Image 1 (cartoon, rainbow, N blue to C red):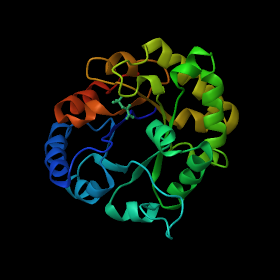
Image 2: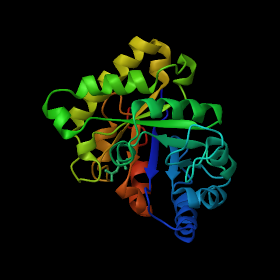
Image 3: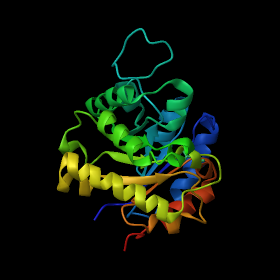
Length: 255
Ligand code: PEP
């Protein structure tokens, strides 16, 4: 049985003060939820404050990106050891906004996954097709390429902690979520490929979460689909009550 996983990706929103206020309120709202892994991903500047505000709670902290080197002349970049030092334990890798706006590729995703593991961070790896690719019936081919190249040289035993976020690009920030059937189909395909390429047991342990316009109103229908193990939430995670409701409605979804 996989523990549901729900993460909030704040993108470039919230100052340090806003982060601390949110985390203090949020940890109280989810304090009794011990059957969902709960993660918040604030901007780099607020990671340490978020980790401090979440200390001794069931809320963990993620960065939204990292560089693959430990240190060096890479102006503006942040490495895995630097993120780990803030108290964050996870890192989002390959978000579609990084792929489309900042030139992220499957090759850079691959290097970042290796760096995350080396630095003691758990990767949350985002994959998903664009609307054009879906309309050209290329969804499965795109997912296959992103998994094969992105997860190249990931060991089978690293698949259990790793989280894959299936985020159809056309559903991110658009208000248009995938239907439960579309999510189930894509998640089933991803699980099948993981089984083929990493083995049945590791594939069974890997959480595959859905992302794309998740809200309190649609999480239950999505999270009850087979192979949907939770959610990566953008916009709706900025509101503390909406996000705590999403976490709460993700409980026991697979039962
Ligand atoms: C995201 O940023 O990963 C995301 C899924 O955004 P939204 O929930 O706003 O569509």
